[in-house]
Image 1 (cartoon, one colour):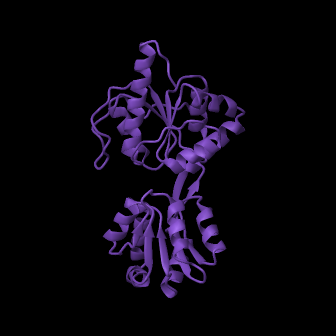
Image 2: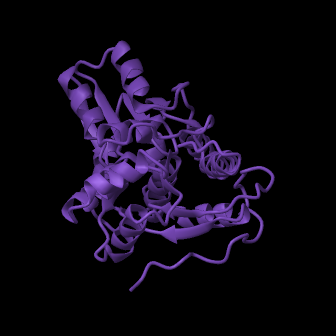
Image 3: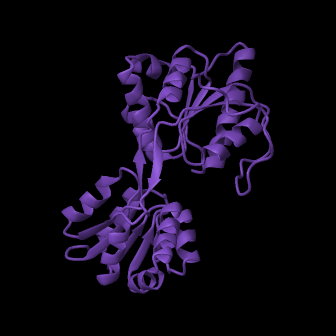
Amino acid sequence: MTNRPAGPPGGPGAPAGFDDGPVVAATGTVVITADRRADEQAVGLQRHGLRVLRAPVLGTVLETDEGPLRAVTDELIARPPAVLVANTGIGIRTWVEAAAAWGLGPGLAAALSGSTIVARGPKAVGALRRAGFEVAWRAPTEQMAEVVAHVLAGGVEGRRVAVQRHGEDWEVADRLRAAGAEVIEVPVYRWVVPADSEAAQDAIAQICDGLVDAVTFTSAPAVRHFVALAESLGVAGDLLGALNGSVLAACVGPVCAGAATEVGIDRPLVPEHWRLGALVRMVAEELVRRQTAVRAGHPTA
């Protein structure tokens, strides 16, 4: 099956709550590697006149069906943590909703009422406050490395620290354990590789053939898996050559961009505000800038 556009250029207005500003009259083809919020991203890009190819390399699976999350919730209610590290808004919201569905909502609320709660970013803060929890501190840079440094600075030896896990961020728990903390990981969801990678393979082929203008990444694991898939196809060199040449590699934030540089993407672009709407607008504006430069006789990459 061939990878087809998500819809015609210039879609309807932006989804509710999705702010990417006034329409930019852009042209070109953009590959979306995300699975979560892919519809919003596609509509946003199409509003600006861009053609979209969906090529999800990772999906998310919620751990709410009486699996490890239930057992961890029971454990934290029985022995509350001194510190809770909240990573993502969707993770906190899903955990609270799952606990309520299991009849454990009051127990979880009571268990966390005496915990020092720290959050990575505003979405996690919003989810916590809506659930009735008080947030003691939020990372100004919205990066987990800063959250871990803050928690370590307060001392963790012998303390019980609950960490809402986000995909593959095992390093967070490892650093806290190395400092003497008893770490309880809260596995709300996990990354999974789609059973069918044909769409991603087709997108990689189109990038290598010069048929794509930009690729968007919204997570570090997605960057790594996208390049790993190209390696398995024997075209990693061609892919990286394109992403370091005429194809714009756009990352939603610095952690994602850091993963991009690690795998060989030299100059990934990151929006000033690390949000999906800002990413979409940056891509549209940058493609317009590049196309204008080409028409003026000044090719740029």
